[in-house]
Each structure stands twice: as C-alpha cells, then as structure tokens.
Image 1: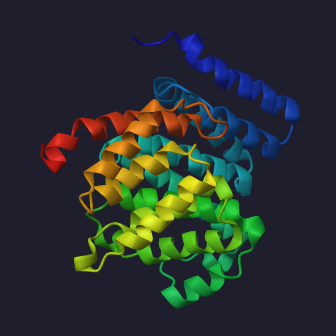
Image 2: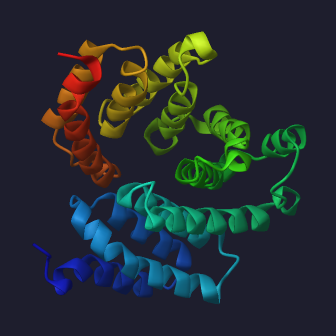
Image 3: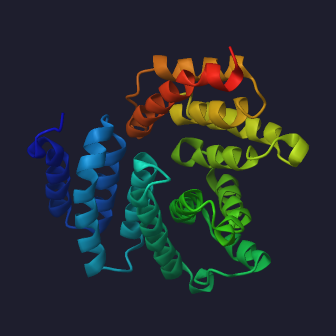
Length: 283
C-alpha cells in the first residue's frame, strides 16, 4: 500500500532544511548522502528519491562545477538505476544521468581526462596521477561507468571500455582499499567472475576480492555476500557456499551506518536467489 506523501517527503524536507542551515553545498552533499544510505525501506527510496533529484539538479544548475554535488548526484542516480532495474527504461536513463554528472566532475578535475576516447595507455597514465584526495571522484566515476555498461550490455562500444573501469578500481585499491567498505574489491570481483577459468576468466582472483570486501566491512556489507553467491558460487557450481552466504545475509540485521539501504536491497536479492537455488543447481 502506498505511503502517505508526507511520510515519503519527511526525510527529504529534513535534509533540505539542514542543507539550508549549513549554507554550503559541501555540507548539503554530505547530509543528502547520509540520509539516503541509512534509509531502511526500498519503497521510500524509490518513491522519495525523485525529490532529491529535483533539489540536486537545482543546486547544480546554480553551481555546475561543484565536484561534490556532481559526485552526490552521480551516486544517487546510479543507486536508483540499480534498485529500479538494469533492464528498465528508467534504469537506463538514470545510468546515463549518473555517468553524465560524474564525467562533468572529471572534466572539472582534469581537462586532460575530458575525452571519452582516450587510448588505454594515456588513460591509465593520467589516472595514475590522481591521488588519495581524488578517491571519491574515482569511485563515483568507476561505479557510474560500470552501471552504464551494465544497463547497455548489448552496446559493444561501451563493453569495450571495461578495462578502463577496471583500471579505475585498481587505482582506488592502490590509494585506499577501505574506501566505502571495500567496495572497489567487490566491483573487481564481479568483473573477474564474468567467465569460467576454461574460457579465460579469473574466478579465483574474484574469490579473493569477494573475501577481502567482506573482511573490510567485518561482514556487514551484505551485498558483498550476495554478489559472491551470484557471481562466484554459481560460476563454479558450489551450492553449499551459495546457500550458506545467502542464508547469512537473510539472518543478519540490515541496519548499519552507511550500509543500511544497500543491506535491505541485499536481503531482497538474497531471497530471490535462494528461491531459485533448486532450479539452478538441481535438487
């Protein structure tokens, strides 16, 4: 049953008032991010997030070169794309918006990177010059780019850019592997588990990345266990590992500062994967 509009908008209004009180877009970006990642209801996020989009777009219109705001917008749009579904028209639209905002931030940061067709060597050389202060930007760029590729899997010109995305995540690991609860390890794990070893994949590299992502969050980043089951356990046909990981996710309490919304989504996905375990592995 739909929630009353006033309940959906309450966290939005609270954050808006807090942002106005702070008088700085940097504080606004921090508060809006905190409010979103700590929501514990996916329906509230789906229905309430568009109000955030309107506010953020307004702030960006007034200050189009604010890197913090562009990063916040990109991460919000990217999260929304994942929740509404990669294969939906809305998911594709949101993924495009996410990438557009973060690429603008990249251009503000370094005009030399502001060319989408840079050759790989030039690209990696420029990325290697980015430092620890750039990690939030690199991460937003890499995740938005991943989301764009995921929502446009049939576009081989986009898929061909995956090595650049991988290079961004590897740069994050070199600078701060703990950033965002070790999520760079999680993304690299998914990238490395796209193919079985017989076809050139690196499932054991993927396994190490999955386990490190779980370790860095002390097991509280539940989406890491879900993706470990989805991408690794299913790839190597390990039902025991698959079902154990998913059951652990279902049994956990999702509330965790900075991870609550992701954990609620992870539990939803864990139920769906566990329900198809018999079908996938055979009874």
